Image 1 (cartoon, rainbow, N blue to C red):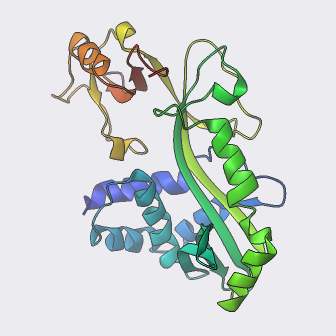
Image 2 (cartoon, rainbow, N blue to C red):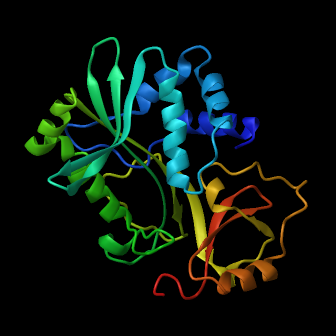
Length: 272
């Protein structure tokens, strides 16, 4: 269960934040629909009330999906038909669809794919390795290809079309909804052309360069961190943070006293 005020802030972030990745040709952004739902009277209040009654998932990606689902569930115009639709043929799993959403006004059935991601820029690296996640096996360029060429293309497969038709579903529109943040250094790192130029930003550095107090942001708050202020009492000295991060295998998100978000990485990252 989450604090109602925090959930209200998360829902506001969800409906107002810019997308991270632009949709491919033949696919639309779901942002306008999500904002339209949020603009319906009482939708965000009812969505927050629904989420308060649910256990908060450990996985941030699942919590993100729950936020989106809660907004859709309380819309008058749009209906959440199904989530995490499995696609199986002769016992073989082809994948799944994140969401099926119906436009009640038009009868149109939409396939939605969702992603919430965080990547750190590595200047001078080849494009395929220039934007790793905290786990460097997760790469922005790879995620874009997977979203564009596989996840959003599933409903183009005649086998999948037949599977959905057997359940009375005919998808006529594909939608992409992404959120997240890219953490830059002082040196420019080339971005894939599919990245939204207006994406949310942060910075990152190696722990050895940390020179200001900060507070570690838990993973489940990476998307929407509590407001940072000088009144907080849990800021940790820079040297303590440096020592802590160096013991880890991946970067950690830190909020500074100035209210900025940054990732601090151990010297071993991203090679180990």
